[in-house]
Length: 260
Ligand code: HEM
Image (cartoon, rainbow, N blue to C red; front, side, top):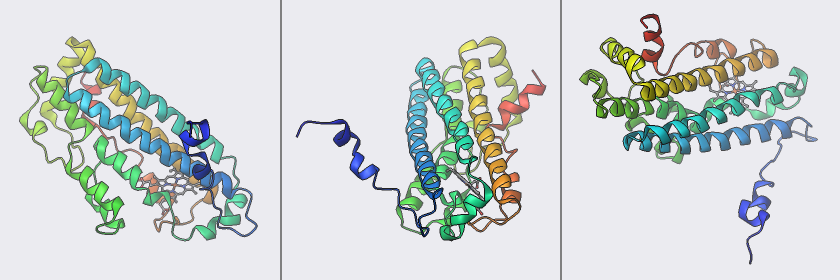
């Protein structure tokens, strides 16, 4: 059989994967399903690109790393902008099928957690939501034990001759990235004397800000759609999400700004 558009993209399978659970079914549930599926596809692509970015940093290829970072940042813009589409759904439209979601929530997106982990925002407790031995849990366990994008970046700085403190290079990679004050003079010197690496630092700040932007837009969408109700995932809802807003992934890159 010759390859066709449809066979290559497995369109029959793809387009049969939107199955509303509400009676009727409710009109808006189709949008809700498709948006979430699109998010999961973008998460998959982002993980694919961040893994590649890590390998480029490992190969000390700053130029291609910068190109890949640009792609990641562009996807992130699209991912944030997509919230506009879901915000066309009113609270009543959402309520028409919300109860049928039972305990299902984006809270359980293992790819979102993988993304957090690979960037540097690790949290071993997040594993507990996934069944031991299951595919999602195994993927997260692997990500938990692997060095993050931040670790790959610090290794590149050291390989380029910058005196990155051992404390930062040998950190426990299963933990979230913590600020290392001894790294600040190194980063400041890079900003002043190494334009290629300084530019990579700025792109990482863009990435960190992009993730924070998504969190902010998501919590606003939650507030306007369900107000102060609890989440289907079992959390306090918007109140919980507010606690995740101001947590930079690469804290040192933010802290040095006051010292530049
Ligand atoms: C009407 C739309 C939405 C509402 C009302 C909503 C609501 C919520 C709530 C209340 C939480 C907190 C956890 C819980 O108790 O459930 C949450 C978490 C989350 N949602 Fe949504 N959500 C919506 C759309 C989306 C979309 C489109 C995505 C894209 C994948 C998404 C991804 C996530 C993620 C990843 C979390 C975990 C965030 C974290 O723990 O930092 N949500 N959502």
